[in-house]
Image 1 (cartoon, one colour):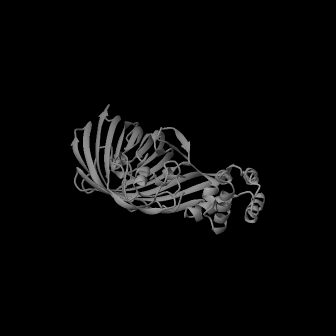
Image 2 (cartoon, helix red, strand yellow):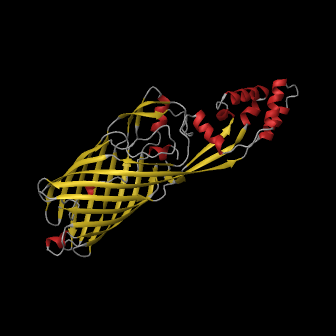
Image 3 (cartoon, one colour):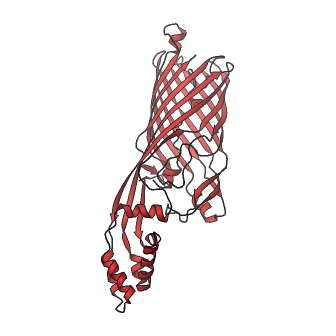
Length: 414
């Protein structure tokens, strides 16, 4: 639920550029033929990530209800802790109502819609529109108790208490045990965040517009290139909400892509390789101004010039065609994102935000596809369409959420 969850754009968006083909990965639509597509993507519970050392850890926010975090809640708490510090600095330093942790689990689903059309036999243009639905569930629990009796012992070490200091001692002796409401009060009143709790939202993701051009088609092997833009139409991260998920990264992207493949055994077996490079443009963002590399919360908000790291995507794998209408494929996918850059008047915050902003992930995907295109061409089916079922699992990574996703893909040609 901390910054890694907040800053993550889950890449379950619809990438029709690599899924628009009739057969091999480098194929394009015939001239005048249009393709309509729908894809539903569902993730499992996202409650952990691969950290900077590539080890898995759970999403959790821990907050100690100590004097430093409590004294600014209101004037009464400020006065109490000022008096406590004057009586015994050790009592102030060690005071705690306890420690609480908030564990988070996020789920994301996407409904994607796309349209492609063959401008020529070698050139296909397309666009895709994803609609996100996401929710985050929080479980707040206590991890450490209070030390009121220890604080009282510190106070009693001073035998010459004034009348005001004796009042502080009596208040300390009668302090109640803290509940979750106190943690909520610190988050809202001290750090100025919106109340923490379960969160959900639905909205538009980033729209992709592009074109694919087939350079080579030699029967059993081929090559195509693609390019386009990703428009910042998706919901951005809210710096005042700890537990939200963004549907877009807030700036335009430019990408270039290469598809190549080779067929064997009279096109019974295909081997495909895709490579995609994405340049992410800079944009002005309203962000929290972090004060520590280790502590995720901060009070101040300001504007930063953010340049997210560029991305490289690579995927390859075989597809086996059992019949004219059924196939099974497996794909290995790799994604690498470079380190982000931040510019503002807060030099330390710039470095903290950029720290561990680079990432990589390794995925395995299995897919079963059913197509009536060949049957339609042989006049054995009423219309050309295809249906695919996919399952993808992230098997390793660095600075990236761990999750699996499941897809249902439907395309029809007209």
